[in-house]
Length: 193
Image (cartoon, rainbow, N blue to C red; front, side, top):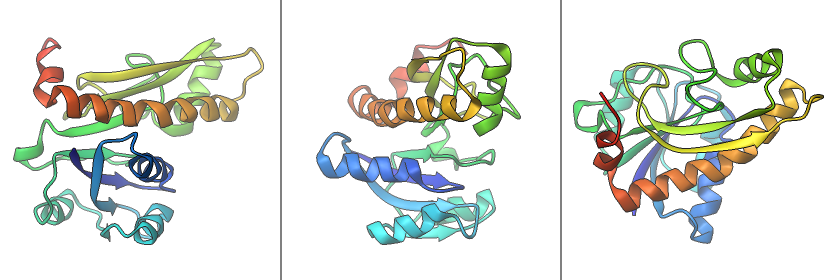
């Protein structure tokens, strides 16, 4: 079972998904702590409601100081809108979800609705999400799981976002279960560095 920390900046929809799947036995993980870099993030209220330790801190050093107090295998970036720098012991243990099929529509400046607008503007007929290990460069760590979604000609950025988020709800738990099964090193060793 993976012991995870959840870092978020917003509504906590991914936290909701994790909590539900842990409860029904489809995610083999245990949430140790939830941290937000946004003081009034709805995700913090949800974490408290679920009974998880929940903290607001803005700086990486403060996040890492909190993480020292918990047994953590994996740090999950669940809509965490800041470049996170983990402590040395966890540098290869940070997992992010990105709302496109990397390497398309990724990197610095591509997040949230910006991605979906770019997909729409390009006229793509397929989009999706990528769960990957995070590195010091946006969206460049080893890929764990990708899920694609078909798009229609009349999809809007909002309808694309809804389709992609539905895929994210499947992909992130699947990725965590794969990491639990195969181990972190498996994924780092299978890519060229």
